[in-house]
Image (cartoon, rainbow, N blue to C red; front, top):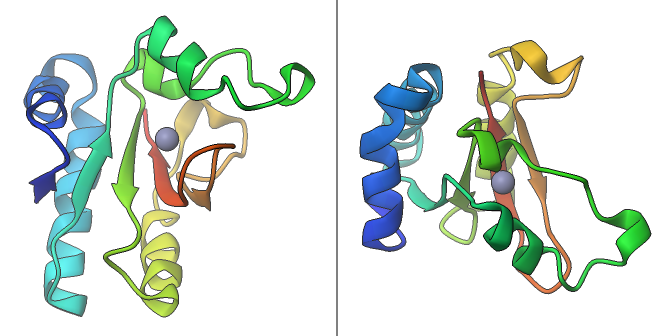
Length: 127
Ligand SMILES: [Zn+2]
């Protein structure tokens, strides 16, 4: 597993305290991508403060902006998607969505999306 900056590495190392299931899913995903594609994953975001959340959605119209994010509660992580082909991302999503986002009220564990002003990435939410 690779990390965008030391911040993501330290957030990942803190996961056993906050959300051990998210850490395990990321480890299993890293093993899956290594075995299936010969690639490792790059973690680009884990925990987000409210200020970081607000900054990230600055380019999103207010009426389309979510009120909060699972990142603010240690329930989500983002993976760089430019490392993978479209077919690999599709396979990755199928694999990840075998897991259940318990408090997500039917929302999937993994989605491939973009936030205005940013780049497409794989968002993973687990609790
Ligand atoms: Zn995310």
